Length: 278
Ligand SMILES: C[S@@+](CC[C@H](N)C(=O)[O-])C[C@H]1O[C@@H](n2cnc3c(N)ncnc32)[C@H](O)[C@@H]1O
Image 1 (cartoon, helix red, strand yellow):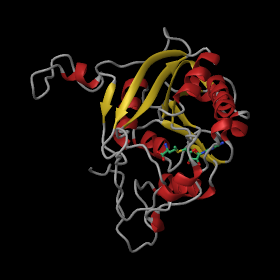
Image 2 (cartoon, rainbow, N blue to C red):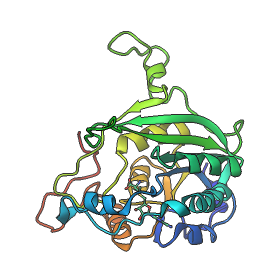
Image 3 (tube, protein in one colour):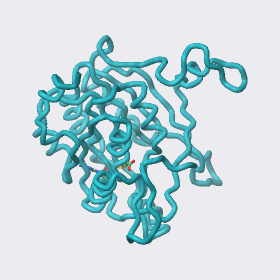
């Protein structure tokens, strides 16, 4: 089944993650070798605010987050998105997360790369940062794009059949396919974590609709390794890159130990691959 896909990508890449700059590492990959890109690139944010935010609860939150200066963000986005487009198969899809403040650069880069926008999704999460002079930001954008709209995969009844109803009598598959996704962030009490991470439920939903078992899923900005870890749990093959050595180390530890959460010492509780509850 997956043999023809394996041939397009050297086996040394399959089910591996690498530490380094994804733009350089992508230049070593062949054209059209991945089925699905799910990624959450660094946002260009205020460095002072970022330091305060990321230092807030110290010990188990790994430091070293690699942010991009606002003035460099368009060039950075054009560079990585062009590289990711080259390695995406003609039948592939890409889901790119973005905050609202630099959405403009992402939309420009999507046009530049001649990608087709399939959906502009909104991920609504709980607990934004409280404000007094403006509304609370409680969403991210997620751009679902592809190279060839006729060839991309989409499994419309992968989670609910046509007859399943919601509690209020609506159509479950319709509700699940609405473009606003209300999904809670995960809390990993006591476990080693990075400052930002995508909830597993979000990644599972994308994998269900836009991939099949054995597909190659690629994340150039791995962070804690969520996309690779969840892809592995769901029987997909994975490739990923991360520039910050500590984050790469965490992602690698999670993948190699087959543990969803990892702890600092061996005598702390160890969870298996089941997803945390909210
Ligand atoms: C928003 S975070 C990704 C979080 C990830 N989705 C998760 O769930 O943990 C973006 C990541 O990109 C990494 N990064 C920034 N520039 C990079 C580059 N040029 N190459 C590879 N990784 C990079 C950052 O260190 C950060 O970990």
